[in-house]
Amino acid sequence: MEGGVIGDLAALASCRTCLFEPGAPECGKPLAHEHSCTRWRPASLFDQALVNSAIRVDPMDKLCIAGGRALDGVLSASGAKNAALPILAATLLASGPVRLTNVPALRDISTTLELLGQLGARLWREGDVVQSEPAELASFAAPYELVKTMRASILVLGPLLARYGRADVSLPGGCAIGARPVNLHIEGLRAMGAEISVEGGYIRARAQRLRGARLVMEMVSVTGTENLMMAAALAEGETLIE
Image (cartoon, rainbow, N blue to C red; front, side, top):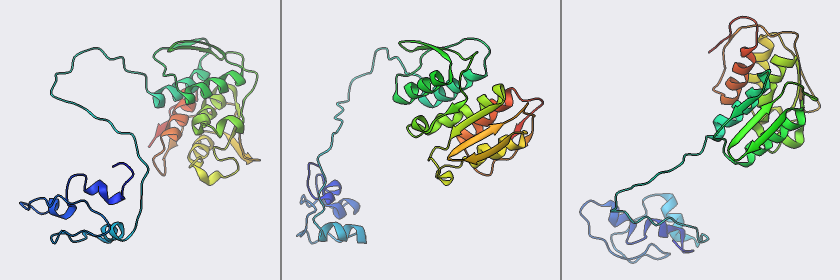
């Protein structure tokens, strides 16, 4: 698969159709523009297009695994990014320092820490250990410059609103509210008593105190559920998310 006709994917060793016929011998000829094997027939319009065109692919990396040996050793599993991001956002709910371990060293993690730092949280990081203390925030806005690089930045919406009563978070796609289903976040927080407007590409949310509510999600949204769960943590009363 080194820069040849794309049909070679199906003929690394022999004729594609011959391989698909039970008990048929391999003809040993590559799939190219003109296939002389009398047994070969295009299995689909896609196969015919491969034969009739000279589509080429660039060489790609490959993994060669030589098996036959028992595995033995110790492997350190890195923490999951998709778990670390909402947990970092959830530190905004705390009244004191929160210490996290096994935090992966990834760009999205660094972006989240940068966002928390811009909000005013005191941060400390060494290796895979992160400590965040957001007791005295100086800002309640997540700017587009950061949100555009990581859409999960919207996860600060629920915690900021629940703990501090206000949040200004850029839409993940700027002014394009349809780019992601942020309406689930907005409608859920409104049901909990928040006043929310969308102005200039920002979700502007205000609330004296959120209250528990029954929230029915119109579609599956991981970040939407996480945001509403974090908001519900400091809301008055019980919140049910369905």
